[in-house]
Every structure is written in C-alpha cells, then in structure tokens.
Amino acid sequence: MTEKIYIFDTTLRDGEQSPGASMNLDEKLQIAEVLDSMKVDIIEAGFPIASNGDFEAVSEVSKHVKHSTIAGLARASFRDIDRAWEAVQYAKSPRIHTFIATSPLHMKYKLKKTEEEVLEAIKKTVSHARNLCDNIEWSCEDGGRSELEFLYQCIELAINSGASTINIPDTVGYTLPEEFGKIFKNVKNNVPNIDKAILSTHTHNDLGLATANNVAAIKQGARQVECTINGMGERAGNSSLEEIVMTLKVKKDLMPFHTDIKTESIMKASRLVSSITGFPVQPNKAIVGANAFAHEAGIHQDGMLKHAGTYEIMTPESIGLNKSSLVLGKHSGKHAFSEKLKELGYEVGDNALMELFGRFKDLADKKKEIFEEDLIALAEDRTSTYDEHIKFVSLEVNAGSVEKAEAKLKIEINDNLENIKINGNGPVDATFNAIKKLTNTEFKLKLYQVNAITAGTDAQGEVTVRLEDKDLSSQAKGSDPDIIVASAKAYINALNRLIFKKTKSIKENTASLKIEGV
Ligand code: KIV
Ligand code: ZN
Image (cartoon, helix red, strand yellow):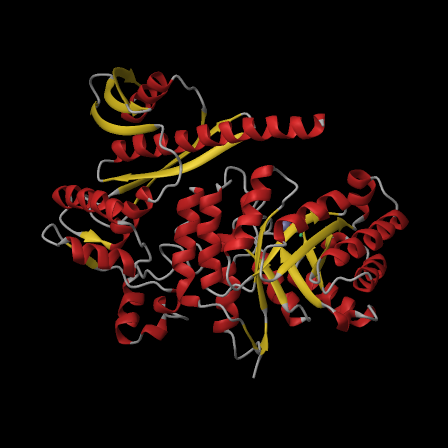
C-alpha cells in the first residue's frame, strides 16, 4: 500500500486571484461540485473577509459540498479568523487556514513586525482559531525565503497552538526544486513536534518550477499538495492539480504515493474552469492543452499507430479525454444530441436543451462535420451564468483591401433592439466600434486572441477578449464559424461580465461603507 497525498485545491481562492478571473457565486458552486465529485480532499473556497461576495461564496460552498473538507483563508487577525469560521462552519468538515509572513523582507516592509511580534501573533491567532474549529492549517507566507531557524520556531509554536497542517509556500516562485525540498527535509529533522502535523506544500510558477517544487517537497515529506485547476493563480499561477496528480500516477515506480483523485474528471474540470474564467488553456499546456495528446511529426504518427506507448506516457482516457471524433451531423436528432451532451458532462434542462439544439442545427447547416469540441463550445456559451443585459442578434461586415471596413450590427440591450452601421480599421475594429457606440462603453481591450476549435477551413473560430476598466477586468470567449461574429460574441460576453463585476463592486463598496459607518 502506498502513502496517500492529500490534494488541496485552491482554484476558488488563489486561482481567483488571477487578474480578471473573478467568479460569481453560481460559478464557484459549479466548480466546487466538480472538485468534490473528483474527490479533491480539501477545497479552499475563498477568503471570507475579502468581501461580502467572498463570504457568501465560502458559506454556500460549505453548505453544498458533500465530501471534501472546506477551508476558508484568514490573515493573522481575530477579525479575519472569526469571519472565516462564520463562513466554513456549515461544512461537514470545516477548516480555518490562517497565515502570516515569516521572511525578513515581508516582516520588515509589509508587516513592520519583529520576529518576536510575529511569534506572538502566531500563538494568539492559531490558538484563537483552534478554539473555534478542530481543523487548523497554518501557513508561513514567503516560507521559501524565510530563515530556517526562525521557521522552525514558528512551526513548533503553530503546532503547539493547535495547527494540524503546516503549509510552507514558495509564495513568489523563487526556489529551485532542490532548495525547496531541503526546506522540508530540514523542517522534518529540526522541528521537535513535526510528527503531530501534516506537512503541506504550496508553490507558484514564476520560474515555471511550481510542479517540480511540489514534487521535490513530496519527496522530502510533504503529504498535502496545494494546487489549482489549469494552474490558475496569482501572477504566473500555482502548481496545477492535473500536473501533480498525473505525475504521481505516471511515476509510481519512483514515488510510492497515491492520490484519491478521479483522474478521468480532469478534462471536465479544466474545461469548466477555463470557460467560467474565460482563461484559455495554452495549447501546449501539460496534460490538458489541446496538443497534449496530438502527434504532428510523421515519425511520431507512425510510432503511435504501431504502439501508443511509443509517444504517450499516459492515455488520453485516463484524464477523461476521448479522442477527437466526428460525433453528430445535421440529421442527428434531439435525443442523440442530449445524450452526447450528457456524455461530455453537460446536464441541461428542457428549455436550455431546446435552445441549444436549435443552435446546433444552425451550426450543422454552416459546418459539415460537428466535433465534440464544437458541442463543448456551444454548451459553454449557453451555460454562462451572467445576466445577459446585452445580447448579440446579427452582424454583417464589409471588408477587404479596397474600401474601409463597415459593420452593421444588431444587438438587444435589456430586451430593446438597437442597430448601427459604422466604419473601422478592419472588420474587427468596425465590429467593436459598433458595440462600443451602441452600449455607450469605452473599456480598454487588453487581449484579443483567435483560435480554431477544430481543423478545416469551416472550423469554428474561438475568440477570447479581455476588457479592463480601472482595477476591474473580465475575460470571455465567443465561438462561431465566422471569426468576426465570434469576436462580437466574445466582446459582448466580456462586456456583460464586466458590467456584472462593476455593479457587484459598487454594491460591496456601499455595504462595506455601511459596516464601517456603524
Ligand atoms: O502563496 C502564498 O503564500 C499563499 C498563502 C496565503 C498560503 O497563497
Ligand atoms: Zn499562493
């Protein structure tokens, strides 16, 4: 029997800290449900003190999730810890995750605290948390750059004060695997009560070493790994769940560990997180990228036909990926369509099914062959949970090398039909000008990216758009066989999200003003 590695997923907390990736309550619940069903051991559902929205999301996730432990993050303050407990108390298995920085740089410049003051804060806050909840995780923020002797003292004190999980983060993604592994080895050898806690690793990908660092930490004694779906997270992101879980599965011969994760659900989780956040997965991303199981070179294709093991170290099926196949055509019926959607992980109600089926028929008229990827794009467009104040109706564009591009756009704004004819510097610019003019908005376009969903000149184009307004941003996708129409849909989806976020942030600011004013 191999030793178990606990999987702690922080997509809903550290992952949501990716700029532009914030999610609404419904979306967080959808992700939590998938994480729970794929047997993630601990779900970090958010940072309850951060906003009323975060608090509500952590409490709702706590109430809904059936199996996983639910953690809420808190700084080293009674107010943060009380708020985290208020939110996670509903969970079948609640956890408070509290942290304080322990590196000289963070203590001096950020906290403005001496080592003694940090030790005092650990003692007070961990004991306070332990009085509220049986399951306490304590993290030494910037652990990777902390001085070892001081780290030993902090960890010993945190355990004595009631922490049963000790998490050492490489907060800024600065360490090398060997260096990070050594910290765990030293902690194991030098903290006298370390056998009373589970050691945990939390890494960031600033140098592209996040997963390698987690592997090194496991080899030196970590038994909990913190990670996110698709490697979402602050700056360059966190170590990704799929990479660490599949590494442990594929390299069983060298590492005698296992996780309980149902790896066949990895693709479903990856697609869901990408569609909800609007963050596309890079094609060459390990495990879940579109090219992760694609073989281009003739010599590779020849090898694959003779024996899949020649160029594949794991099967696509092991992560829930069925080889891209022609699935439906224009003559397929509603039953076959609904069964295929179910197989891909999308359960939709009768009304949504009728609407999706209509859109599938339109697509099948434009495009000879419908692939799984096409159905996923259709389903994901429909499952958006943002109120669509603005709806795409139709678009005609004249463009080319002679005349200035002209877009004729019809959209609905709060159910009122609006239309406009406008010029631009090329078809995309004309289309975006039309949307801006009709909606009277002028947000910064920070990202515009086009991908083909499948092969062939009649393939659907998938466009990703990111819009920014001061400190808020939103990212969304749109798909259509016509890439200019896909661009319009992506822009409108991003606009709906940004409007939602702006409204939410105004409400939250008003609420917090009220709280401060009491
Ligand atoms: O990266 C980090 O240090 C964190 C902690 C809050 C665990 O995310
Ligand atoms: Zn982090």
